[in-house]
Amino acid sequence: MLQQLANLEVSADDTSSIEADGGGAAIALSRANQGFGGAIAFGVSAAINNLTPTVQAYLAGATVTDAAGVVLDAKSQSDIKANTWAGAIAGAASGTSGLQGTGAGAGSGNTITSTVEALIRDSSDVSTASGGDILLTVTDTPSVFADAGGVAASVERNSGTNVPVAFGAAASYNGITGGTIQAAIEDSTVTSRGQLTLEANSAPEIEAISISLSVGAAMSGGGVPASRWSAPEPARETRSATRPRRRSARAARWRRSAAAIFAWTRPTRP
Image 1 (cartoon, one colour):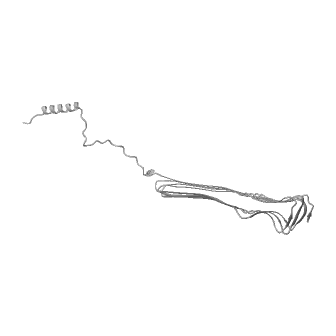
Image 2: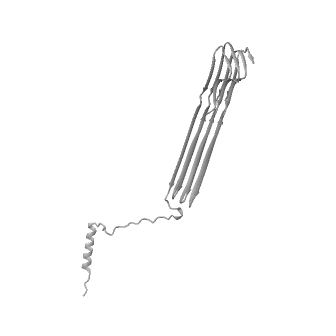
Image 3: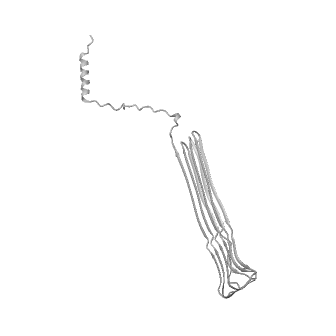
């Protein structure tokens, strides 16, 4: 039992916080001069965070007489910050054919369930002096900030069949659910000779960013292996048999003159 108080003030304040960072990376490289070549890489990152604060400012089974003022104040400022990322890179070079795969996934699950109360309960009897106020206030401001990113890259080079596969994913689940936010008088007697105020405020906030990127590239070349390469034969000039060469007029006259001289000097048989 409390009598003739200047002021009666009961307050409760909660500032629970979770900050989580997670990352995963994978790199795979493969080289095969002949035959089948391949590389596989997977990167995964995940985070699960839960907050369940309970904040209460109350009078239970209490008797307060002629108080100058009564204040019950409950506050909760819980927050979760989660950053998750994952990356995977795979590269392969093979002589004939190749298969490679990369996968990167990042995500988080974040929930806040708050119970914030300012109560006069359990058969309490509360009164104030002349001009005295009774004030019950509740404030809840939960917040979740979640970022997730997944990047996968697959690059392959060979002289045959290429099968590059890349998969990137990012996701986050965020919830501010359930709980109880209240300013109340339960099964009690309250006499205020000033103002009686019951106030409950809730301002949840969620900010989430998820980014995923996947890249697959294949390069193939039809070149002959160095062990089988031989220098090409030099090109030979060929002339078409059906296309006679061009003869100049002077060359033609010389040929006719030579034929005439040969015929004149040719001896005749007896």
